[in-house]
Image (tube, rainbow, N blue to C red; front, side, top):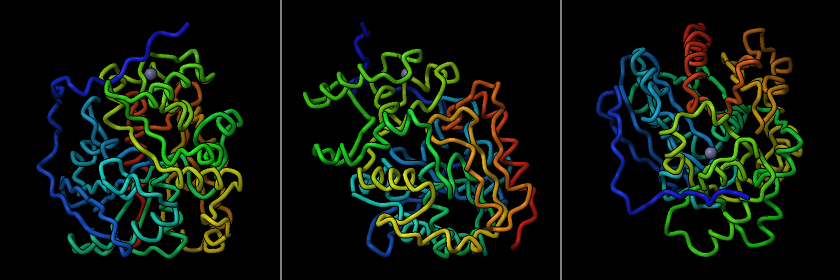
Length: 362
Ligand SMILES: [Zn+2]
């Protein structure tokens, strides 16, 4: 028997949040060449950078600035003197565009060029540095391979040009069964759920309760269950503090089915291809000749670390381009680095050391 799932009470007063240790932000709204409205939020902690942070699928830039952990990545970089730019591209749940059906090619060919040129325009800098995570990383590498210019280094989290998923994830999660879901009329998956959920949502969550993933990690949080169904277990519950776990609905929301379809294709193919399956990206590995640092959770159940840095040999990469894995004995799945305070202590210095101390080409 399972406990009744708990849902976010949308009628409750707003929770009190910890003030972030950053200055007031500057927000820039801008449009892509196909007219989609995107957002950049700037926190100027100093003159280092500019560094652009790019989130994953079904979330927003809030993953870098959540107040429920002691020091988030935004605060860390701000304190280190970086000019930090949080990017919300078209898959961001903070934007109306999140419900649009969009492929990785759309993000790569339209969002990244517009975002990088906007940052260069507003800062006067010649190039940017980037921290990219999950779908933000997949699409970043597509963008670079398609000829994106103005980026001088990247820290890539969990996925890059080669993609391999654990078998269990491959067969059990929404991430890998989009054609089935689309066939039954599902246009998007949403991790957000509240107490006003309609009958369809209740049926959905009832089905998820029987879903055979991660029984040992089972909790009663409905959003948490949906996250596991959509992507695979993304975190060890022991590594999430209560405030973060209780407020997952703030960070996770809708993800469109076309992105899931593209991800399924990438996983089946094993490397980057366009939405139609054409091998348009990997023939241009020479365009990745910038310092790259890979970070991958050793126990990541969403994507396996083995192939994360595989493109290095073909692109003439060096030892420093090998993926940095969290120690296997650390018990970290580390798909969502930002959620793990324990990982944060380990990984943030790695981010700093690995990338921002490497010689820049600009
Ligand atoms: Zn949970």
